[in-house]
Length: 303
Image 1: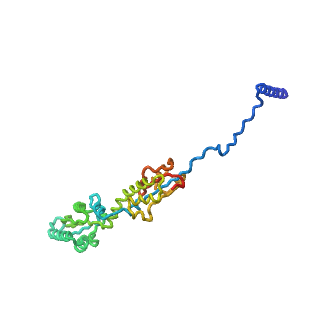
Image 2: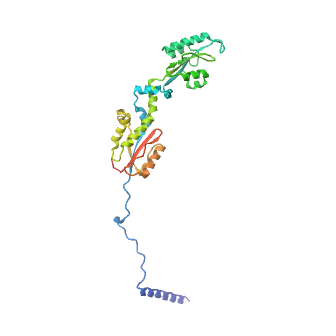
Image 3: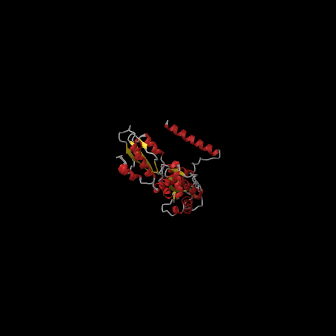
């Protein structure tokens, strides 16, 4: 049986070969190997890698350099919305009423009125409080109130304090259950008012500086002079000469994730880098708390 199968297989193979020959074929060749593609026929390489250039502006740096001419600081501090920034210590002077709350206390009122008049004429309120106040908790400190004590004051006294402008003494003593209070709201020192002014103006100027940087960092602009021009336009020559002036940083697009920035600023930089092409700029400064970020894309090695 095995010999019959062998003869049958051999005859089938001979018949298949004869049919192929009759059709002009021959034995079908094995599949040809893939051609060896040389360098010229290889897939075209991607374009040159992209560099991301970015500049970080810190609001705290801007704050220290905010121009603060005295007339501008004065006008700002006198605006009602800025009264808190111009306010210094709150002071009080107490003349107690002998006999308590229900006594008329005419003598105490007269004494308090005389002390208020002296303070209004320019006498040092703190010195008057140390010498004449009967409030043991504040007398030795020149009548100065700790901030946490304000909410504990009697409503008429608290309301009188709130009505005073910085640098003003109450024109009339304020009656309370203890006696008659003379009140003063000191004006903050010039240094404190100027510091408050700089702090208030810094966010606006930091954003302006970011916009100036973005406008000047065109595709072909040299970063160093562009930064200097932007800083001078917003903060003046003092900012240009400051050793901590913002500077440009360059990183390959593939390494943007390694940059150390605040979360929102870094997210803005990464989003920009993913789709940027050479010459693109961040559409607007990215602001994240103390950080203002601008960026542009350029070919590696470009100025």
